[in-house]
Length: 80
Image 1 (tube, helix red, strand yellow):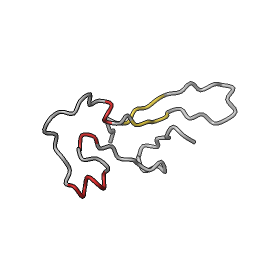
Image 2: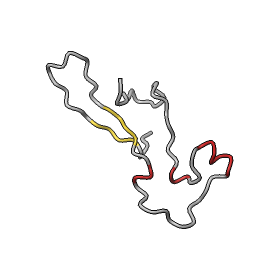
Image 3: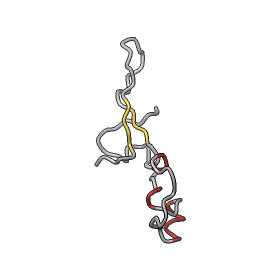
């Protein structure tokens, strides 16, 4: 259940940190970082679906998951 847009990061955990450490932080790399130019004849969403998803092209679609544990595996996101 690993999505290629998600990356993990292991920050330094100080032994003197008064707060409980967050050992793994997760972040999203948007798909537009990998498409250098717009290739011709990209597949397109139908208009109503494109309006719901926020992009016309499926290659540029990146969902915005909830930070309230919608993703499984006990992942802690990069915030509080």
